[in-house]
Amino acid sequence: MENYLKPLKTKLTSLLGKRYFDLYDGEQSFIVYPTNHINLINDFISIEVATCVYSNINEYAHIIENIVALYDQASILSDKISEYVFINVAAKEKHVSVSIGGLDSDLETHYFKTIPELLTYMKEYDNY
Image (tube, rainbow, N blue to C red; front, side):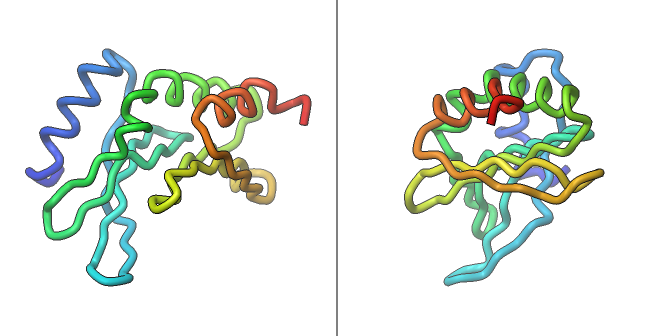
């Protein structure tokens, strides 16, 4: 792991306890500056927690404040439907999206204005 990720990893470990995860910063976009997207990952879930420009990390506070609920609900949903679950942030609007699928089914993406709306959707996924 890159040295600049260690403080974020420590912070997330203190929040998530013994839940298994790693940080991945290999996804990059370039609008004004080269921006790495930092994702908390385990085998079947990915949650975007920050971006990084030239080793300067911009944490998504609304994601980190809710990381335990997001991690647990994404893990439950992934186990229940045997699919990947990806949670991403539309940075300007602070909206969140969930993409489900990609293993045995097509990827479907849904957008939400708040974390509680996203959590409710994941909890009630079979009802949609």
